[in-house]
Image (cartoon, rainbow, N blue to C red; front, side, top):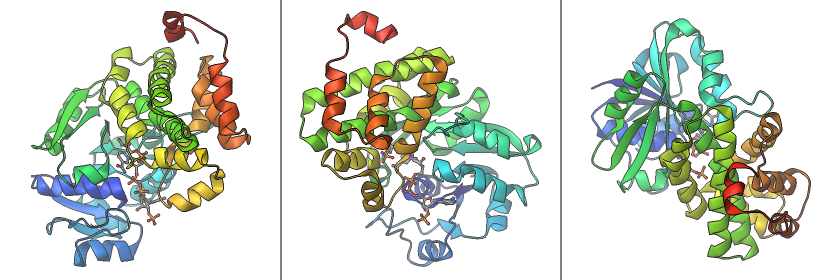
Length: 339
Ligand SMILES: NC(=O)C1=CN([C@@H]2O[C@H](COP(=O)(O)OP(=O)(O)OC[C@H]3O[C@@H](n4cnc5c(N)ncnc54)[C@H](OP(=O)(O)O)[C@@H]3O)[C@@H](O)[C@H]2O)C=CC1
Ligand SMILES: O=C(CO)COP(=O)(O)O
């Protein structure tokens, strides 16, 4: 039994805290809203983020940062990408021990172009960091709390730390593989959200399964091209954090990225879409980062570029599709490696 604090009480933080509590770990979930911590403690629910789910009675919550840090032997960081720096800075105010950190967020920071584990390494003093592990894969919170079989990868260059995380979460419905390629795992988890937005747009326009299969296949090709150029293992993109998460996010109604894309495809503007969603849509910010990474590494990412122009340059989704379909003709094999 380990003492674990999960930072972030949205859908994913709450679902993972539930897995940990059900595995017998002494689990505390930190929320930045006191009323939400009270709801988890007193009602054993989180109605905004996991409506209809009864949380384990052993799962406790707090909005007190010092108490949350004091409790932790292991930290699970589950706030959206935009909140990672701020949460680490708040933790640093009382942190006085060396910990393993598991992060479960899927994004890349625009401009700095760094991944979540790198943001955390920047914000947390190195004497307090034993290891940072990314936990990523096809895993919608709504299905995990129903105990539907789910598989993910625990990834760190520190294989021993990844094994600790594997043991922490593994049970009969949640299966964890280790993977030492954290670069590939974090890129796969973040970039699939960009393609899921595009898949949602396609469905929103009214296109069918042919178009979606094309986006998944060619999307995986461009994610892999960028990842390999940045130094990731190509096989990671064939695995859970690559193809696995790409499939689930492009095809599931649970996906916020797919749902946001769907509204865009139906003609709504980005600000209206984000207001309607009311939950984090990581792919929007990551599209900016991916557009910058494609330029920095000189890698062709046509789907990402078209989505960027739909999100931020007022291109119509249909014009975007036409641009993709009428690109210069090529052989499929060249298109894998080249553009
Ligand atoms: N949902 C899922 O199935 C999965 C999500 N993920 C990833 O997990 C991460 C979190 O997503 P998810 O839980 O789904 O998001 P949600 O939108 O469900 O919830 C976000 C939570 O974070 C809180 N929050 C927002 N900003 C901050 C901040 N600055 N400091 C502290 N708390 C903050 C929100 O509080 P408030 O209510 O006040 O806004 C809310 O409780 C994302 O990176 C996502 O990609 C990964 C796998 C699966
Ligand atoms: O990452 C996820 C599933 O693996 C969740 O995706 P969304 O953020 O699009 O809901």
